[in-house]
Image (cartoon, rainbow, N blue to C red):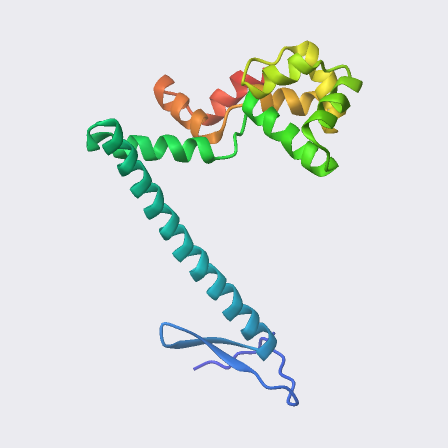
Length: 191
């Protein structure tokens, strides 16, 4: 066996205690008790979130089963119904719904009522009917982007990207349909 001339990066302080970290019955390192406590806290939080997620999924499934039974619809539609609800619950990545979500966040950041927010938007030349149309998911014309930019504190280009952009999964799907790569498709949309 050849001697190893490399210096070790591990430094030990003889006045501190260290705890061994094991993975699959092998010691893989050492850490201080503070780091060990933080690691245990993170793993416990992960486990709690995982259990909570499973419980919420079961509750959603039970609610969908009840709704389908009440409506007299076949249970064959259960998975589709659950996916519809999950899609509705996700934060929208683009389109009018995404802009409406940004407006809701702005209102919450300002900590003002709906009526005050309507007046706030009107002061930036976004009429109450235009605001209502955005929240109803109607198309947002370019003429409103400047007002929205001032209200949200984002550039017009950022808002155009939010309004018109595609999510990664949508680009993947479109690329498969067209028989091209994601990179080629992204270049087409950027030009």
